[in-house]
Amino acid sequence: MLFVSSLAGSVAFYTRLMGCSVGITSDDAVLLIAPGGFQLYLVQVGDRASHPTGSIGNQGITWSTETAAELREFADALRAAGAYTDTHSEGGVTFVEGRDPDDLRVIVTHPSPGEVPRTLVAARLFT
Image (cartoon, rainbow, N blue to C red):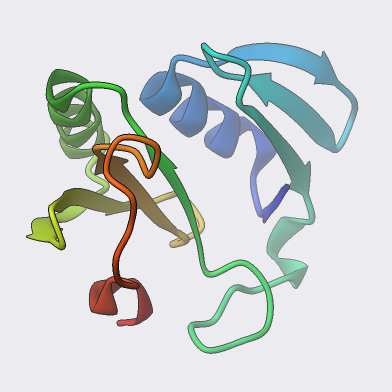
């Protein structure tokens, strides 16, 4: 679940980025369903709730792709949205990073932990 300032902006961002369909909607919340069943609830709180770095709460959202080609597609989608920040590799895993409309970190990885078990916590996750 992500608390967002603008429901419409975040729905547009995540549906475009992840290929989600809109499941259920209400005046201030939306359930997005990604291919494969991943669910993302967006709850609009307006500008009254901030996500400053270092606070308790959501600092980012992370998921993995099944193929390297899908990871490149995520990078391209982040670039097209003006939200791309970085690509790097560590411990045999490639990380593509960006920022959502509320400046929350979006991290997409390949391969998944099921394919390449993680042997370390990537230092970049905390910077």
